[in-house]
Length: 255
Picture 1: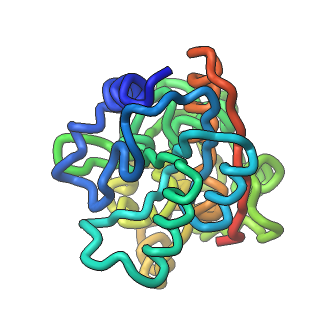
Picture 2: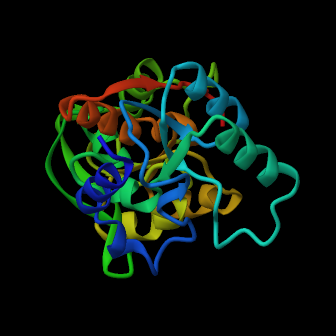
């Protein structure tokens, strides 16, 4: 498949244009010619030298990541930027990135993947950002305790050996769960506003402790990387359905 055709399919599926004014990431094709043929696609959470080299080893012509290398533009191609771009160009590997569009996609996105893991029903978009959303909300099939929530996340996520942390300030029974993966505690107030029992995200901030305590809500900090493998894995399955070979480049950070 020609790279441009694949890019067009992804942009349409992920509604890339809808997030153009909301996301610091330059979503879409970030590096590479749009004209070369793609038969193997590698997917990874982060575009880094380590994942680029492994994508090359896997024989990929295109690397698709959640975190790319261009955040608001690249002024100079030196240092880390040079190393990453050189690693791509030297081996003719194209790079496609989808950040917030892949967070917010209600079927393929990261939050949707966590909701699948928790078997949530009655799902709806959550995590307002402008006119779009970056997360998902739903109800558990059966009530969960905070230990149940922590255990389910811990046993199913690639946390790089780190424990899932929880701020245990919510009700005894958890039914209404909100999810914004990665660095999502900025939506804690919105979770409180919709009377959620818990917010599941990746990493926290100092002020979240007192916000959660005073609001009476649980917060699960399951790891930025760990909560954001779902989107690229969903895209991997989509690529295979389109007749392409794929490889998942797993490089957990423990963060």
